[in-house]
Image 1 (cartoon, one colour):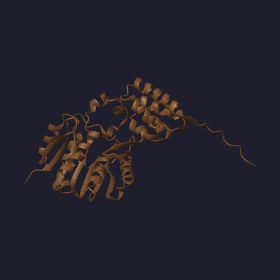
Image 2 (spheres, one colour):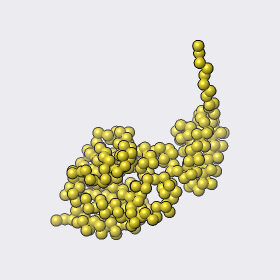
Image 3 (tube, one colour):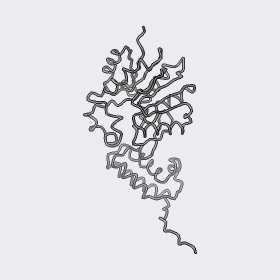
Image 4 (cartoon, helix red, strand yellow):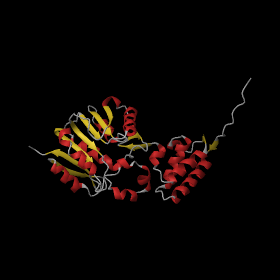
Length: 294
């Protein structure tokens, strides 16, 4: 006895003409929602929904697909869910990282920390690297990519974040040179490091609600909230750095806008020297902390 075939949803051919219509539809929806670059995002979302590459989409190669999937992702983006969460990935330092709502989305300005590390270690290479609050692992894994003889540890208070960072390490072929711990900053660590990296939460609590909707509504508050003045995490981290850094070690922390003076004072109180490095917009974005010469 043969079973009747279950009803299947018919596939819809999305050739060049229908793809153009779908892109125009998406552009209209996203523009109305206040999205910058709506056409670019409409194309990215259509390629994602049809499970094809952007190259295939741009060359208008015919593909069978379901436009309903496109409407679903359009609705999510129109609700201001971050594009990276919808696509499930984001590029950082020319490396591709899986992202999820458990972590902050890697941002270009954070690449300032990697640029600073390369400049500071131009004539020597760090062998032990620590990334505090690792999130996706983007800082640690970008550093390991640049320093092929180094081993790194990433910590995060969020277990899903630490697990995602480990998955990214495996995808990038760096699992054998990295380890990830679910921990409150450096609490369980007894080792010393040549390089410590950190992008701490630095947004003052009262201003989080005024951030763009993609951040305020969707990114994890634990990775954003820096306390009343935005410096709570720096206070916790900086007091531990002398015990974490080797004698000639360097810590590089990301800064929020206007926080360089406050962080420098915290560093001085702990016997550390602070210098800053700007991002591409000229904003002091990274603070480099070293031991005072004894």
